[in-house]
Image 1 (spheres, one colour):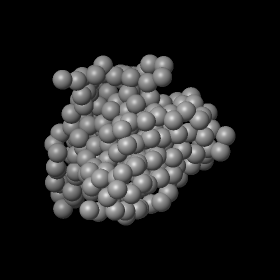
Image 2 (cartoon, rainbow over the protein chains, first blue to last red):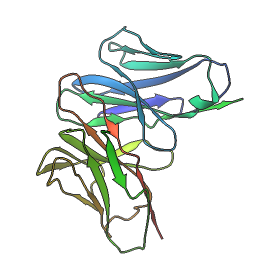
Image 3 (cartoon, each protein chain N blue to C red):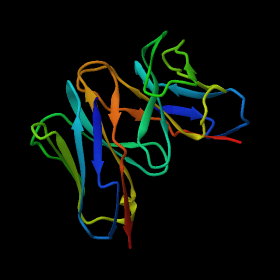
Image 4 (cartoon, rainbow over the protein chains, first blue to last red):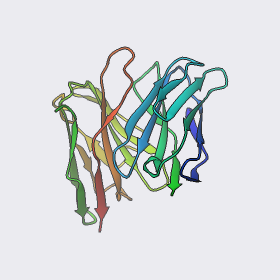
Length: 111
Length: 114
């Protein structure tokens, strides 16, 4: 059975801390892995990863994929209260058109 | 502006009533999806449609129905057969192009059954 597992389920940090969110997956015919940020409304897209070892960066956020060990990490440096959200990891397959979501990591950044 | 719209934002329903949630996109996307999100859980797929007049059941389709008569529209009906319909419902769409896996989400509809 295809599955996506995120850890930790929740995290509380202070502003300025660096956090690492984890996503491991077991899917057949893997095509890509995506990260989304959800703040009490619709998820917003962060990154799409298809190749191992290539880091994607956007400001204080970065992500990398390891297709051999079947996981991805999302790093957030110098966290701010605006980073508080649920971060969702999603995988897509080469067959069919479904997206497999993890349960998400709830991040709370306190001042 | 291109995007996905869902209406209404909040919806209240009495037990035993059917209700239809609207989802419209003007992104010219082929594939559309309906997800349900419950507190502490990830998004679970209800139905998806890759082309007009065709749709497939997702993981939790029981008690729901959909139609795809137009490319732009993918309404979801929550029937009285759905035992626990109170949830946040998200509609999404994707383009069917190589290298484009990004799903675009609507703002969601929060359904409460009284």
